[in-house]
Figure 1: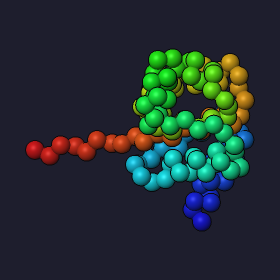
Figure 2: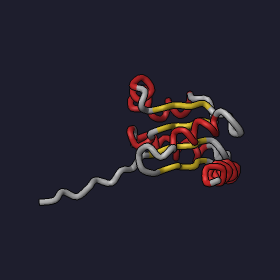
Figure 3: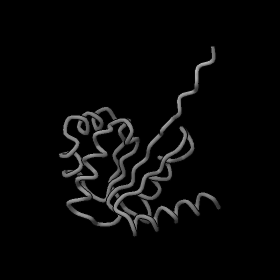
Length: 115
């Protein structure tokens, strides 16, 4: 039930906004959800920054990576290449179409050290 609600909420959001960010703790299903959307009701290219080749391309030329990639696109683990956010913003500013980008981000909080 919750998964279906989130799935449809994101799908609806992609009809309204150029990009959607799914963020949360590790191992909660962000990548799985993004893949389900990209292989289902919102067909998209899927790029994982866990792949060293993809990550290297994105780091060397963030603007070129975004411009040359087939859209719509999923960028999984966006936090691994922070410069991609600037490139995405520039791309959206130049071509503001809804449903271009679905991003996942695993923003883990660091646990405070105990002394």
